[in-house]
Image (cartoon, rainbow, N blue to C red; front, side, top):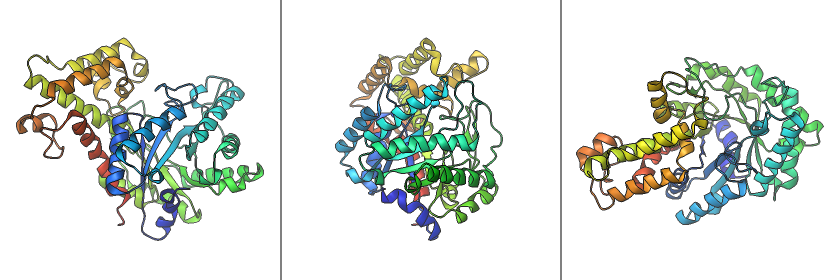
Length: 421
């Protein structure tokens, strides 16, 4: 097991909590920004793929776990990241992509997926079997969830190149990946009783299945600390509301909590999460949101600097792509057309991220980069459309500016995860 993961519980008990940022994105520039920061700081870099994003059938990225590993390793090699400073994780590994199938069929697909993940070298595994499949209730009772999680752990233990390097995450007290689909005012933290029950039943089922040693590799449980984001709002972390939940860790030696949907939280909130026993901070849409914001800023700048570039052609191309294939957003956004248009481009859920890999989008970004190549952006324009980015980027490449935009978000996580230094 990687020291950066193993030390999480130890550092909390020692009174010097440390955390780790879990970068949940398949966008190459986001991955590059995370790895470049890791090279600069010497800190471990944790990159995670989700079950819907990457699986044996390709997921929505078209990548298998082996493909995703090649992508990340290729960038790591280009950036000079030491191999022992890179951790690959799999998030929400379970039957979710196939929950419309009968339970046996969905679990068979999930078993094939987790085998593909471990054989590709993924070592941090979130076992998530909480969702009901065909003819089952949406949420399953704890014993069945634990039994299915143990079945997947057995596959991982059997097929991993070195099972002693595995680190498991259990539980899933969060909405499905990507944020909530409705306006949120308050998010209630997981009760201490529910958290303890999840841990206890998994420990029992693992032991009964002959996987007691594997359970020793469980490093965290996913709970809801009271953070979430919807399409248009963010629920901020309130430490007092999670105080009783945090106290559970005093009774569960060797474990911490993993916090999902920490996107858009303040530095203070992220720091408090690490301090309170939620040191694994998962972030995804918040990073591609920053990337999109910078792309649209550059699109506006190019429109101002070059009359031949046109009026926001990148944004217009993205609207065309969003309208042409609405499958990634149509079932999630609601309201009149003006509201839908704003959500398509600017929602915190950032479902536009599914469209950046399309050839037309990539061609539009390439045209944007060409329009700005060799130009120095005046301070007035830079500050108008790219406020908050570091100084000295006026004549930087488009890629460097985009990476700086993502890194600005990652910098907040770096402060939070090293707050006890």
